[in-house]
Image 1 (cartoon, one colour):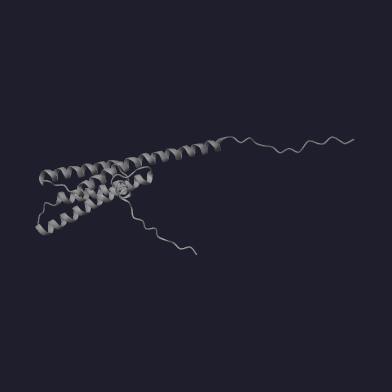
Image 2 (cartoon, one colour):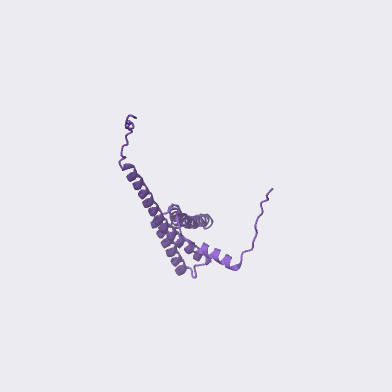
Length: 177
């Protein structure tokens, strides 16, 4: 009877750094890794939108400020960015990154320093989302072209006329003498 064992191994510092670097700047080598980068960016954008919405609603009820329309609009925009980036939209990935960078610059000007380590993490995730969506479209187009070539080759093979073969009886044998 074979027992399943769990292989627990401690990672070296080098493996840990490689894993961290892959998280911060993932390798995008195929359609799945590109989709994963886009999904991760969409998740971050959704988190930004959700957190912004929660903070705005809490501020509305606690301080009585009715100037929350801009904050709710911002939360809704990031919700749309999250949805569209999750689905691989290049323009929305760029728009989400630009919107976040614009808001970061405004925060730095109005409330110095206005940035934290989370700002850098979010910018990195959104940049990876832009990378992922652009690569995703490249890989999808390449796959579609390859499928079209396979279909064209199959159609060409099916279109080759078949030479009919006739089965004729064997020639008669000469009489034996």
